[in-house]
Image 1 (tube, rainbow, N blue to C red):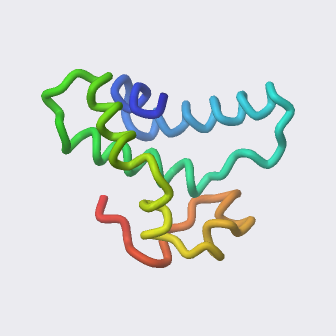
Image 2: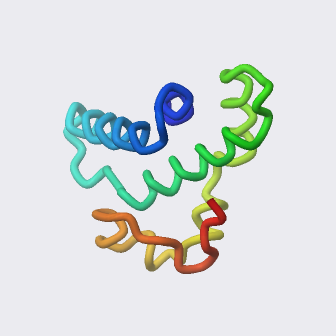
Length: 105
């Protein structure tokens, strides 16, 4: 969904929509404490960067498959954040920049 939102709207609007949909999903399923602001923002920024710079000549569905195959793991998070920071209450509630490797985008 994130890549389709980024394909259809500016990054800030796509991030806002993603926040809303994750929260709606959690509420619908009665799951509290699901939403994580730092993870959501990180992934939206990473996906926006990757989608804008790699395989841009391919159709969206193909790009999504390639991006998920390459980036759909914990490795990007682990490269940028310590476990202590990313699991903190503060990171869950608001955007916290990486404490390991700065974002190049």
